[in-house]
Each structure stands twice: as structure tokens, then as C-alpha cells.
Amino acid sequence: MIRSYSNAMSAPPTTSIEATLLFKLRLVVARFGEMDLAGWWNTRGVLGRLGKAGLSRGFLVTHNFAQARIVFAVATARCKEVYSATDCFTLWNLPPETEEILEANWHTWCRSPEAWAPFFDQLTEIKPSDLGEQLVGLSLIDEAARTAVHKLKPSPHDKSVQLSNPGKLDNQALIHLAAGFSCGAKGQLVVPYIKAR
Image (cartoon, rainbow, N blue to C red; front, side, top):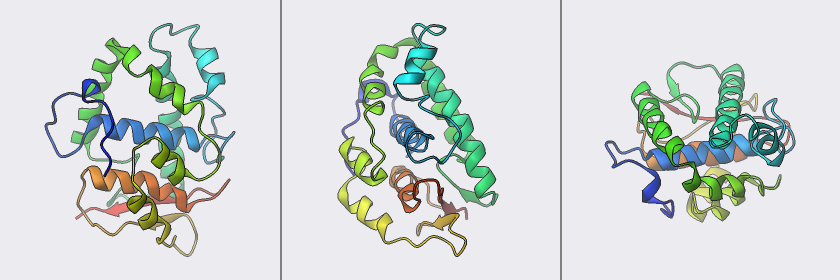
């Protein structure tokens, strides 16, 4: 796994999940899934230039985080609509303690939003090509993870794909949960999941 994200943007690790990594993975998948790119959920450019221009008027300092809240909520709802099993983890359905860690860091990041500005700027440059390629380009996954998810086969109804490490939720699992979205296609959402124990 490539760990090139800034330690300055995350609190000291308290579990095997790194909040900064989770947030960045969600941001990239959220942006990639918007209507103007992959068309998986019904937001258009909210994490792109359009959303930045619109929300920066009302949220002068924290507009990036407002943009993220909007798309995260829509992506979460859409993924639950497509794949609603309750005994699984997805990128948008993680244990409460993991969400609490992310939320605690979120409040810290909002107090120093300038540290996140470069990454949000990179989101506006994401292309509608291959999600795995975008994640590699942003140094969030390596080629091994990208190759691993390309071998996955979606379910017969092409709405979900199971990852192979049941019950284990760590940074590597998060990477695969994000990269697994590349099993989908434009307008066709495939939700990757890990079976809970």
C-alpha cells in the first residue's frame, strides 16, 4: 500500500483504520460517481468546479467539506438502494466506531481547511476513465490493489461484488472497497462489499 497522504491532516491512530485514508478514498469515489463522470448517483459536479463555485459563497472557509457532506449522503443512499445487505461492510457502510473516528477528525480538519485545499483541487481534475487509474494517480492505491480488483467478478445481477477478506476491516480493506467500484461501468453502479463475521 502506498502511504503518501499527509500525517499532519490526521489525528494519532487509535485503530487500524486511518481516517485520512478513508476520507480521501471516499472523496475520490464520490467524485468519480457523480453524474458528469460515471453517473452512479444523482449529483452533478458537486465535488467539481461547479460545486466549489456554488458552495463557496455560503461556506467561505469550509465549502469543500460542505460539498463532501452532500455527495457522501447521496452516495450512501444510492449504494444502500443498490445493495442493502446488513451483514456486510461497504465503503459507505462501516462500523459506528469507524464513523465516529472519521467524524472526530472531520471537525479537526474543518478548523484547518487550507491543509485539504490541494486535494480538493485534485478532485476537480478527475477524468471519467478508470477509477483504479485515478486512485493510483492520487497515490491512494498501488498497482497490485488495482490488479486485484480487476480480477473480481460482479454478482449475476451486476449490482455487487464480494471482496475476499471476510470480516477484516483495516486500511487494506478500505483500499479494496474503494477500488472495487471500478468493477462498475458508466451508468452501472457495482457496490463492493466485505462480509462481516
